[in-house]
Image (cartoon, rainbow, N blue to C red; front, side, top):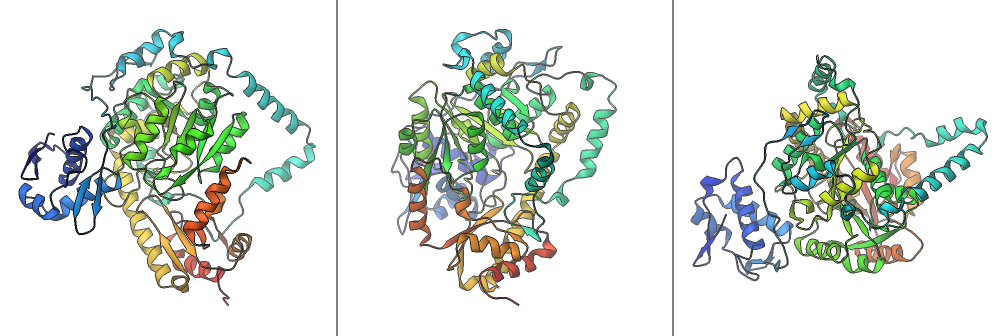
Length: 555
């Protein structure tokens, strides 16, 4: 996709776009030319109207392509001047390898690959003991301290009186609410249960006994091949099925990573961010550090200062802010990872499928030229929460370490569910379901915003939303304390989530810098994180009415 610049004009053969839409092809073409230096830094791009006339396409098509380039940080816009190319000179394009037909061995382990690292990945299973693939400390017994931590927790639990156990379970149960605005739930009514049931019945009726035997530790080959193909089609990721590990939930896979990398590995988390991953790190005894963010995402200089070896990020849709990490910050993150052999990036791509304008944001993994990114995703949000199937994609050298140290763990997902999901993906039902769900959430989002605009909340609040995910931030001018907001919400039958609930604290002062930065940004307003995916349409108006009552006197 080379471009020829004639009188400041870009020329592309739009007939070679294949199945891509016009704007996606144009965006990808310009993005690659910028990344490869064919369009130098500082170059002024043609105006939308001139480029549209030159390529004989609509202005809206060029606008969509330019908007995506701006979102990812490849292009900036200057008022009354036009569009200019950003400096991405340090960006290295990942080489693309032709697709290789995949096959399977008798024991179910896939041989061959669809990624550039196919030989390295396949070789892992032939030589588990490759010393150069192990991390420092991993071969020295990474499980000893973790076993001690688990044993200590078990001993503490066993000391509790048996009579208290039922009360502890009761305390752990979620209370019932009219609407839970905190839980990041999905609308289960959209799930094609009939189609899923058909594939489950198909799995149970197979004449072969393959599904009744023990499956490989990394998951059913059929599912790993289906996921690899799906990632290639939808996320631009060149992945070998051998590099994919299937597990029962992201928490399980994250725990395996912690155990493999060893208790001396320090982890960093975006602050604010998901508390659960910090809690898991603490439970395994790993040191962890919260790292502040700004309008471009995680601050890499703060990451360097933290002394972390591995960082957990969500570059396509940071939670709860919705920030998309631009290309310059991504380059800084890659540069950080390449400074030391033990440094890795865990890319959590959860929720990234739900983007309501432009195309999906390119994952870090797709641009990783140094095998430094561990890709993590789950099907619980795109399908249903009860489907506890997640997966991670490991770089070949980390895969070798995983095989050496973690392959004694059995796969934690039923072979029947894995087979059904593989068929669900292969037949295109997953992509159709995501498209249908995305359209539903777009309408749901618009309806919630419309209800807020027509309610008393409009006079005391404003919304910050980034056309992605299933939540947005609602800033409210109120004298109520955070505890009072939560209490009054509970009285209205609403489980309310506040921005401050996602601030991570480890006692070393990092969270204070984040808190101060946020307070300056929010001007002292109270920020609510409104997860609207689980609101039933018939309860929408009443939900907004009750939310307004939290901040004013209602009868």
